[in-house]
Image 1 (tube, rainbow, N blue to C red):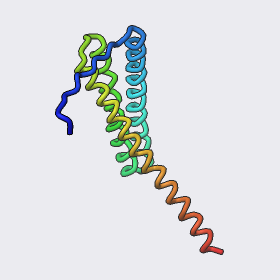
Image 2 (cartoon, rainbow, N blue to C red):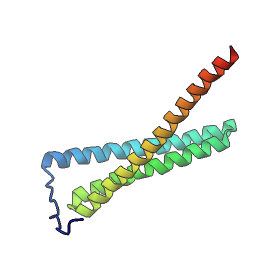
Image 3 (tube, helix red, strand yellow):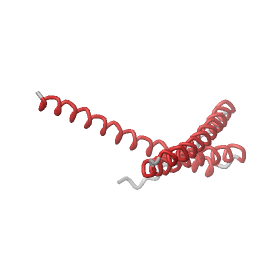
Image 4 (cartoon, one colour):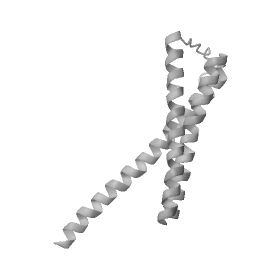
Length: 128
């Protein structure tokens, strides 16, 4: 590795970017609150239908994911309002984690769908 230290990059937040980030944080908060509320309602309905394990698993995953989005929203807004770079960085770190978790879940779901499709085709071939 090279021992030459790189100067820390200094980014400036233009008024337009600040406005866009505040709007994004507001929408992230709305989405997170609606998703968490939806998870709670879904959990109640699922309990009434007797699907306890699936509903608990689904609600736990939803809460886990959307709390990161909610943290992004509050930290980004505070960071922008107080000109606190560390708070803004923490907010974006939470947004990064949110997208990573969502990406892993999507890869798992797509993999399950592909496997189900393969088993469907193999099952149809064996049937004939």
